[in-house]
Image (cartoon, rainbow, N blue to C red; front, side, top):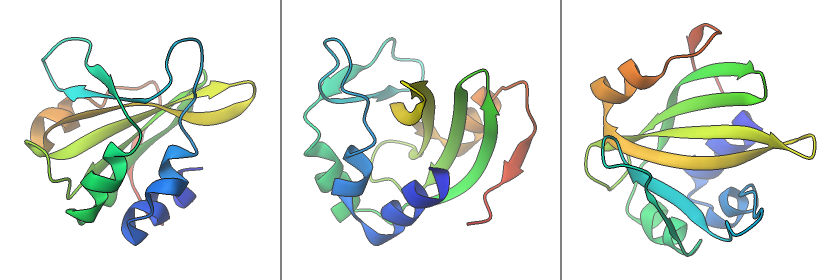
Amino acid sequence: MVRSLCAAFARKDPASVTRDLPYYQYNSGLRYGMLGDGEGQTGDPSLMATWLAHSSVRCALQSSGSHGHGTVLATGWPLRGGSALIEFDTYAGRWKINDFTFGPYGALYRALQTARPIVRYAG
């Protein structure tokens, strides 16, 4: 999942990214927010096309999945701070993107706390 998602970012392929959104309950869009700004918001998945068109996203770090949850830290986003934590959860046995949290690299690195080691992405 992580390798294909990071490759989709590098190709600027929003369809591959949004295909991995969960679409569960009332969450029918792209969940995102800024670090420290509360719960975030849900936007239309077409936002991903806009973001990727003006980006050079590269995955930098990842935490391996623990208890159905994993995280990737990616840089090169055209949003405030330029970096994002992309959080994954399992839904019906498949990894899906839960949300995107944007902010500065250093703050997001500190927020990347898991029960597993944080390793450099080597895709």
